[in-house]
Image: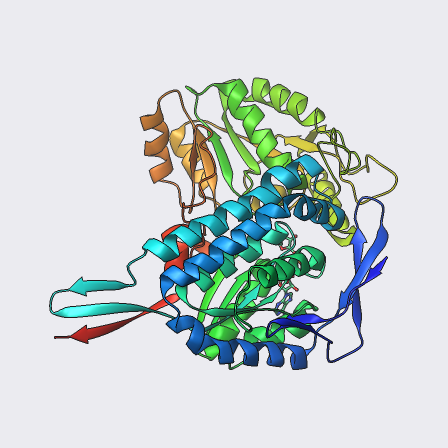
Length: 470
Ligand code: NAD
């Protein structure tokens, strides 16, 4: 077990103000693998002061130079890609292959995209007799979750730095080791002191202190709706900018003309990857009533291939969920699904392995739109199949939750799928299995959030405008 100390503040590892620590648990064997300091309001204050002091210099650094630093950061991440993957697997439990392919690779792509954007974005516009300057908002407070520990950090840090903002990150309690590794890489990349700062700690202590700090100009939060709501209220009270990326309950709509087998297979993979701990996962599969029984069979067969196992084994396809609390929460939903009359086709509340926080890959059939498992975010390897009678019915079900983060539409004809996608109340839709695009804006309609991450839209979240009239 490794006992880490220090917070990355003002370009160096500094001792924490208090003596409390947070244990980091390997969810595959339930052993404590490390401890990190539990930061307090005092540590947050030191980090915000460092970010404040670094802001004027960083904001004045030419964008082309900022791009150079981001490129160096991307290269530092690429050089230690394997270590990133191993760290995510150790503290999150994601299968090592998925950690390499997604947890390590996606943030490298995103950092690279912001190096390019910093170099090419104009930061100045003309509007009639005005010149509009796009200036950095200031000091950013970023609060991130554990489900994509590096991606969620990079999706905030890279655009903030590209825009000329400085930042303090408070990562999730369950996954601070990936965040510490990222801070090391920032240091290696030679970023000026104070531009990036890291404070580990508990949400209601360090997270809250960061969200409430008057030296923070913009709070960017990803996590649960309950906490997001509070952070939004705090930011509103202080009249400061806020970006919220909250939950989802996305619909995978399979229209009758689609390739059913492919749509179901990809849909199941989308839900089971990362043990279902993906906010944009398509956890509701909507199938026409005539094809429903066939889809249920196909989904059960596909889900049974996700055999739970040690995430360090190359062959494991399903790791544990992140914590005992998360496992119990998911099991609670499985029990509710059964109690409300849904049918377990495969999986269920029984644990597939005796040790580790594992949940069996589960497919529910005969799910109706008003059931809890069709309305609330479960955040586990659980798929609900719903039947629809016609397209209007499918649309009503797809749009019938408080969320609107992502979704998918499958049809024989792309234009047919696009016509349906246009009517969906959601921020992203994959058409016939479209690929991840690091430049596509990501964020929610309705209660899935406020603001966008990634690409140009992610950059402009960190900019404010000043108009000069001539
Ligand atoms: P959470 O919202 O409690 O935690 C997210 C981050 O917020 C963490 O860094 C946490 O320390 C911090 N935080 C917690 N309380 C805070 C407070 N009062 N003030 C400031 N910061 C605070 O989420 P969780 O408990 O880790 O997960 C609970 C549920 O949230 C999950 O089951 C899932 O449904 C959802 N979730 C969604 C996402 C997403 O990407 N949208 C990510 C993780 C979790």
